[in-house]
Every structure is written in C-alpha cells, then in structure tokens.
Length: 291
Image (cartoon, rainbow, N blue to C red; front, side):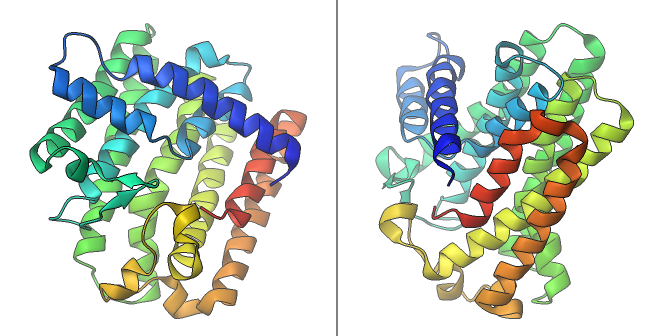
C-alpha cells in the first residue's frame, strides 16, 4: 500500500471509529446490548464501505460531517451481517478480526439480537440525521434493496444453498453477498452529492467492478492468506465443500481477473480528476491487500 495512502486510510479509520462508537447506541439500551455493541466497534475492521461513502461524497464536496451518518449506517448493516454470518446456524466461526466472534464472547441469543439492533438502527440513523425528504427516501431505498433479499441477504442464502457450482452462479452469488453493499456505499456518496445521472452511473459501474475484485482477493486470501494477519481461519470454503472462482480460474487466473476489474474501475474515475486520487489508491489496496 502506498505509504501516504496508508496514513490517510489509517487516519480515516481512526476518525471514523471515534464517531462510530458514539453513534451506534444510546444510553437507554440495556447494558448487555451496550456491552456487545462496544465489543463489535472495538474489534475494528477495514471500514471499506464507510470509506467509500465518504470518499465518493467528497467527489461532490460533501464533508465527512454530513456523510458520516450514511457511512455509519452502511457499516452497521455490514457488522450485523458478519455477526449473523458467524453464527453456528451459518458459517459457525470462532474468530473474527482476531477476536472471538460475538456469540462466543457473549451468547448466541445476544449475538442475534445485537445484529437485529444494528439492522434496525441503521435506518433510524438515516431518517434522524438527513432532513431532505427525497434524499432520505433514496438512501433508505438503496440500503433496503442492497442489504435485503435481492442483495446481501439473498447472496448469503445462495452461499448456504448454491444454485450450482458453475462460474456464472458463483459470480451471481458474489454480486449479491459482497458486491451489493459495496455498490450501495458508492451510490450513497452519489446521493449525498446530488450527482447527475451520468456520474451516478459511473460510480455504480465502479462499485460493481471493485466489488468483484474484492471478492476475488477474499477468495485468494481464504486459500493462502496468513491467519494471524487476516484474523480468522483460512480454507473455510474448501473444508465445507464450497467452490469459489479460484476453482474455476486457479490462483493466477483469479489474480488476473481481479487486475482486469481494477484496471476498468480506475479508468472510470478519470472524469473526477484529482478528487478521485484516494479512490484510485483504494483500488490498489483492494488488489494487493493481505487481510
């Protein structure tokens, strides 16, 4: 990762985490819910989706003071999905981000309810903090569509119950499970910035491409990543008999696919000039990430 971008990204994550910790709950919650939410926020994460929201909004000169609430809402949805994904009924994982998964740290029922709270409050956060009715409508429609049955949740179902092991069906599952929320993040930036249709469509294509590349690198890391760096077990898909694009392309073929997606994504950003510098650097991070 570029040294300057590494510092920029680290500073963003630090700033975001400070705000996120104060946003995701209030003092009226039961103490055990506050404790579980604190645990989730303290274990950190890549914060890729909120970074995309804020950076895409900044293309239209929207400050983080405005984009932070939409960014937090997306991260709340992402965190809820990971909590539920780790449950015994789904992937049954013991570790996440180098820490015990929530159901192991607390209990299964608290993990389920914590995820439910994050899901519900993400929409509350948007409705409470944005006053323009049309903007709120667009944000809620995007988040519900991309996180629900035709988006992330649909992808999670297809991950558990695949249509087939074909390349097309795996790519479709990835498009929903991983790509949907990434596309939602970039579109949030466009909505906050009141982008015209052309730029909104460019960002949608950009989100689609980096989502594909992100999932490919995720699959590669699941095969040959370092567990200590990743913070979770590797070879999970293989041990459960799941196929990924690695099985169709091989490691090097998959890397080339990811590189092609990133190259296309970078070209799309030309229209934004220097304002897209950090998004360009993010694409390099996605391609070369180690966790």
